[in-house]
View: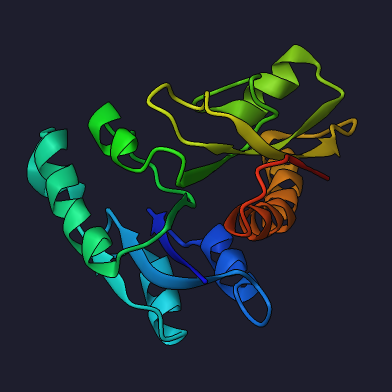
Amino acid sequence: MKRVAILISGSGSNMLCLLESMQGAHPARPVLVVSNDPAAAGLARAAERGIATASVDHRAFKGDRAAFEAELLRPILAAAPDILCLAGFMRVLTPAFVERFRGRMLNIHPSLLPKYPGLHTHARALAAGDPQAGCTVHEVTPELDAGPILGQARVPVLPGDTEATLAARVLEAEHRLYPAVLARFAAGDRRPVLL
């Protein structure tokens, strides 16, 4: 049984889907939810489900990412996870942090990578006139949003779509894709999940 730590920054909607999926015959169990924001709503949601939580406020480190990550590592290492899942964790991690968990850290991104790494993905897809958008789960590597793809889900871009309407449909796809990828990955299978 693989042990999973989930890193969040906000409400944790993807976190909730991951937590709900890790039951029964699932090959993993959640051991920790950690946030860079002590007020993140997702921490309370995880605690209500009996999952250990921790927070390390990045603002207290005034741009010293190495010091922030050293503090972030404390609860993570204490929980001894096999897999780390970034689920709306809005901090760029240093190469040293990423290398420590090479091949064991997943992230979900709201575009069909390699298209539109970084921010403002829905606006960029709409501006380009793309007929489809979607989301990608990938292994985290030191290069932003560039790790091996473990799964993708596509959604149509509809006439009249706004950033908000497209984002809502992509989020629904994220809620299906991330749990499916985590289950396969935790079982030792890195073949991409395509939805």
